[in-house]
Image (cartoon, rainbow, N blue to C red; front, side):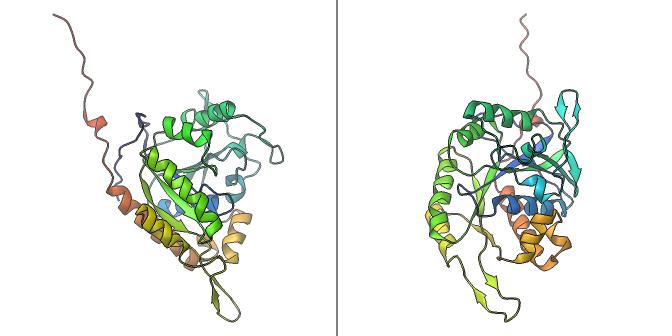
Length: 281
């Protein structure tokens, strides 16, 4: 599979070694955004793509737990962070830089500088896709990241519950205003099936994500179940595919739809043009 570089937005410049940056967003905490971002990155790597994962959630970095590396501290080479290489991914998180129990009591300007360093001052290798686990909300941090980060597109994660849909809708609207395309929405915790009796229950309601689909004209990339194996995989730092391949298949289908929608976006042809210089006679 060949992945092409696509257009970036808001007058940003694409990083030469990263073809596409996809932000996984929610606008709401607690909907499973980080877990979805990690498993999406794993699924994309299973397609023989070169994938990176950047945890941009400064206040609540979850990636160190998800990858089972709470004690990892990145080395520095040539004044650049060296990302963790695990699960065939290149991984970096703010959680690798501070103690697990230490809160990030920082104001916006400092956080924006930290996020800028995580992206631009890291020794990323050649990547087809860099998945960015965004912090929840729609504040100053997100606006700054949209203006400075060369994003190709975003993916939105939600639960079908109305209380989540309100905030997630605001997040989608924000990215629309920033002219950053949304590749689709993922409904997490969609259904729960009892392992003993087989009864299926929509614990957080039904058809909620359908409202977002109609309101913002988005494709539903997939509906993920509420299952204990997803929780167990996340807490133990073991990829879901090694615990429950059937459920992991949901993420594989989502990754394939993501690539299809990515292929429909405008391509980036800037690398095709040589440098033009004007020399006076």
